[in-house]
Image (tube, rainbow, N blue to C red; front, side):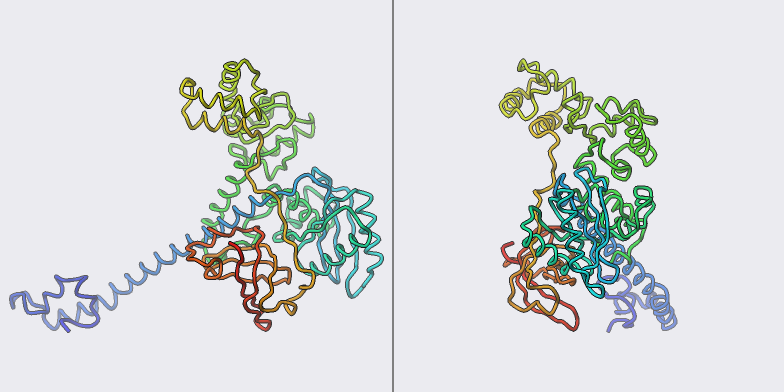
Amino acid sequence: MKYSASYPDTLLFPQLNQLFDGTQPESNRVTSVQRRYLNLAWDKKLLPKLETDVLTQLKDRAEEGAIQVFADNLHDLLMSAPAGAFRVLGVDPGFRNGVKLAVIDEQGSVLDHGVIYPHGPQNRTQEAEATLLSLINRHRIAWLAVGNGTASRETEALINALITQQQLDCRAVVVSEAGASVYSASPIAIQEFPDLDVTIRGAVSIARRFQDPLAELVKIDPQAIGVGQYQHDVKVSLLSKSLGNVVEDCVNRVGVDINLASVSLLSYVSGLTQRLAQNIVEYRQQKGRIESRAELLKIKGIGEKCFEQCAGFLRILNGKEALDQSGVHPESYPLVQQMAERLSLKAHQLLNNSHALQQLKNMAPSMAQVDDFTYSDILTELAKPGRDPRPEFRYAVFDQTVQTLDDVHEGMTLEGVVTNVAAFGAFVDIGVHQDGLIHISQLANRFVKDPRDLVRVGQVVNVTVLEVDVQRKRIALKANGL
């Protein structure tokens, strides 16, 4: 050994090593006293500082990774496919406290609500079936959205049996109720439904998130949705900022129907604050339907600068200006008019007109007013005005013979929904109140660096059960066909 074992590797400190290896003149060599103090400085000062710095850097890197996982999962959840404008019966299951029901119309307004007690200890099954049948027929229900919490599978089985028995023209689907209880007791829910019981508000939230996950989930603190990884161990400020950016990005990417959007949804539109969003809703309530983007300038607080930032993300369907339903910004309307005139058409005649748009694409070099990227984006918007970038709606069909963890056996092939994606794999709800894990090594028959390359939150997947540990409540799964 060339010097005390307390010292760092000689490759890191070659000059220090020369003081001990005899290559230096005797007058420059370290004495025993100096050696002792160098050891002391290393042990008490340098090494602890280095350890602290390294651990701090590793922790910061781990926090960044955890926040990124949460942000990615939240993005996928918010961008989940909407079912669309249907009449929906929201069902918040429960045993002792009953199953809460809420009927909403195509615009999300509450039409009816109630509570049934089909399960133990009350077991008022016939009464519950009669109430369900009455609500379905009276309000012409198309879908029943059942929360995936306690008594979910029992309630789903009851509803499916009723649909089959009565030959009803509707379907039941299980929906994640993560964060519904947080919303139901929030100031937003109280303001929306001051006369409804807190439990009924949860059923309303379940029904609405089935119609449009993005519009409803923005009302809930993203940290309460539960799609994170080690979220309670990271800096709250960094997490909140990251998640807020994700929500804003999703809202602006999809666009907002200004005549239907809530204050919560409007407040995430670029350029709008909570106060301005409230002003829009109040203006809508007093005046009625907003007919054009230009009308935004009449709303208190919205000036030219604010209009410039928000107008492109707000949609007005069936308004005075046909282009208001698209993502084309009003500042580009004159260019669209010129493009239409080149083909002897009106601006609205370019919408969904593939032949005309192809001609305009060929004319791109002569349209020098804007850059190529802006020109291409305008043509894309005109081709599919008001298009929704979210995927087509699809839901999982749970195996009705698998109700609890005891019903799950090795070798089973089941359908489920991805509820969370972490760096080590994906968690899947297969309908037994306990998510199974597809380890990253079981996602595909090839090397997978990032699980999100194959699966996203909300995605319906087909899995095979590899192992079931009932005592520890663990299910190991393998993905099929990814």
